[in-house]
Length: 463
Image 1 (cartoon, one colour):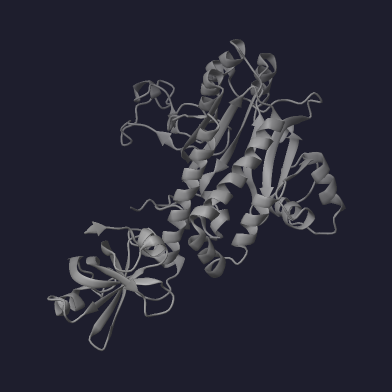
Image 2: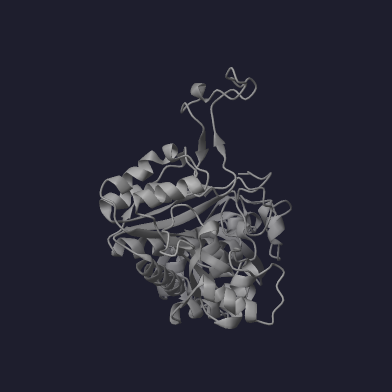
């Protein structure tokens, strides 16, 4: 007898098929000599109902053991369902309980639990409807990302997790060391003697794979990274993680227009693919979490993104009658309230802002001819603000050297990055997307800690 995944059974199972399913009991109820057990194996939002009758040789034993949370295998024959909400059900012929779950102590009973509570039982929360749906959508997102780039001939590059350079000068980095922290070696100047450390120099967990991706793009033309990145910012908010995943494509022989075109096509592809592959999960989010989830997806898929310069955006914001918490002024970075106002109220669709002031962007972004702006772009989406940030990179050696020095960085540290401009430099561009922010945006979940299986945040590194 073939063992089938429940998603497949619910989708294409036919009456009179003999099958077996394996999973965990969601609910059990008894009625006039029958027991109705709902089994879920994580493959679908819905569970499969199995009907057990007293003819089973171990009927009484199963009734005692098959409580919510127990692991179980049920073999039998599919029959048309007599109840509502399900096309078919499984008439059980044999039942094996692999592992019991004490109903007095099992923390996931048939009631609503707060997300705060579920985070305290991260080893069990994937069994809930909401977190199960989140992780199926997350999986579909990841698959869609790889498909998008692979279909276009991009090379997936595994960039290092341990690095000696800070890509953006973007906040605190986690140090990596094997020095004895109880007796740190010091130099004559009473500074840490990194020559005795594992790498012989300060090393950190990466904040971005972009610079290494640029190396690979100079040999393979089109590449992308998809891996973990780290920020040691002490931000205990619903939008920040200390460990998260980033997607960063890098394209040689590409300018800012090509970068924007790819980023827009990328977002449309991911949303379209997830709607096709996880329709029940997305409908669940729309009903239970945020009733604009499906409308948001439609807005991304079926609208051409608005494109305007940072300068034009500032002019729009200065003219509006809305009072913002943060000031609006040319030269200042836009805050989330400004970004969302543009996307939600002015254009009512995704917006791509370009050509930001030089002083608020990183050294590697291409300097415009006016030297006041750089060829950078951000995609702003309704409900979330910035979802993608990217730029055309500075390919001119002399300009890049000047920009590095202007930001107080040591060109010697970036000798290899400058070499890329010495030997066969080309115009190139790329962007970055925080994967968890995408999943949060797509599902309507309010806290980013609930879209990653094991969130790493200040004072929290459980599981």
